[in-house]
Image (cartoon, rainbow, N blue to C red; front, side):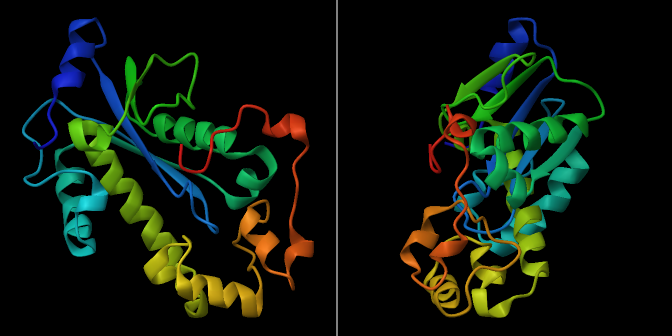
Length: 222
């Protein structure tokens, strides 16, 4: 089943006339920012083949960005840097990235659909969490495509071919792991991540947040 407007219409019927779909990318990466995209639509027919970005080829995702940009009523994109992830933890980093994305929208939405089961945005936003929202909700699916394409492009622009960022976008991969073992982390790596514990030459670089700072944090893949 392709994504539909069922949830957007449900929220609209409840009084939320303008609904934004939000998705994130980069939560489980070892390097680079976490990125969030917010998309609002006029409930018109979406681009053909729109679905969760993970189900689309790289070429189709990139081509669909132009289609989404010409169709969506508003698009906002925000990031939280790897330094923010290290200092603040993933929940707060996601919250900051999402608020930055929402701030870029031309109008403030009445409600937000978040992909997943955890509300990392919180008040004052009216939030509806939807597991696999990128598969079921049109606005969330559109956000997933924009978020992935923009973050992937940023990671590729960093170069660092030995780490394979152009193909793995900072996520774990054999190439990435071998480069870390040989060369250690770059200035773009998250130094609070546990992968450093498995690298004897570099584990001294591991940063540990104060226990209170990490209270209530989301898991990497939650």
